Length: 270
Length: 270
Image (cartoon, rainbow over all chains, first blue to last red; front, side, top):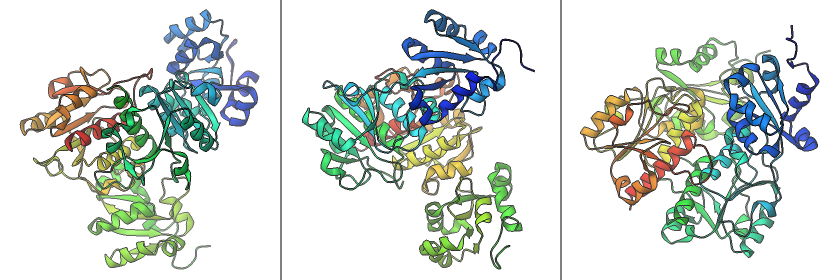
């Protein structure tokens, strides 16, 4: 039996919020879900983003600061029962708190300013965990923006949000970019475009040694299975491979991105 | 109805092989499963490891080289129907071929020789994907071995095997290591031990600049949620943080490992 005052999995509000697990409904409503105390905290620190919070009463007690942040920002707070929290959760075990937020993505022009020094761009990145990790790693490396191509996973996908561990709220993100057109524009405005590619014509160590990496850079990372399409070389300054010193066949996308972005971050600070 | 000559999900052999998804049965039998054409190919290149192969007939046709490799190594090859292949698969869509292999792990002394220059060690790494990615990244960085502590995920776990993308067959791996004891022994034999730690007392850039990273090194990577335990500092030479240039709260284990191992690989080659 439902406790009075607690929303349940059958409540209309919960059923509506739950639909935000699909991209179509997110785009239609302009909203997405951020789950777990840490993501909700980060979201509330950008108060204009958060529309409402759903939480189990025990979470409000345990994370008093969240309740206070929401109150200070006039964000409606709804108590939900366990089943209601589970209904809103992407994870096996709900962390008991979810924020409904406005989508964070901005236009390409707003994301990548003429002053940008380091940008991470993903081409048809299909795994939500990879999109989230790319955003987190770009944030850690001090990147100015993350750009995602058409046919990439939506960064507002619940698994991507979770994998970003709050970083989705930290730096400008743009979606549905045409990377060939964007690369041409970036190069015209003085940003070099480097494609991470296991079959690249130069390698990362060379780019560190010869000073290439010290320049303002957009890194392009290709699809998990197919990389960047044939012919993309025409749109980039260099196609760069991360050296494989052992016998691994290749590196995964998130690993290659971490190595490339951190190499740039270090080179730009020396 | 079962086609004659094809094993099915009900065949005793398939039911037995399927049990290798559990660690206890792997340890009891000394066997594990490597799934997919690429992993099976790598396994067959170490022919002494492969005990038998199960494949859908279409896979044998499509990957003729696998059939040839198995025949050359006198490895029994069994045809299975689709349901049989699915029963042996960890993935949603089976790739149609699985090898039953002998466990690859070796003793700590066999894994880390006195001549080792780069070793990756994981402490209580709980996610199979992280264990597999750590092995793959260590292999790519040219590491000599991977060491996993007690209470880490078994690298023979099907998800770990898959995430290693064949690298589980490329470098020596040891499991159930007591890392405090091992660290003491490594330091006595001239290997420095560096702990990757978000709260480290020095940072990676400093270790690159001052030459620390050029020395033979064992990197320790802690548990996903809790890192390395308090007091572990006593067993290491330095506790090193990967610098966070932006606002990310932290890096995930696989990302931090990629950055640290590649920084060492580069420093040792200059």
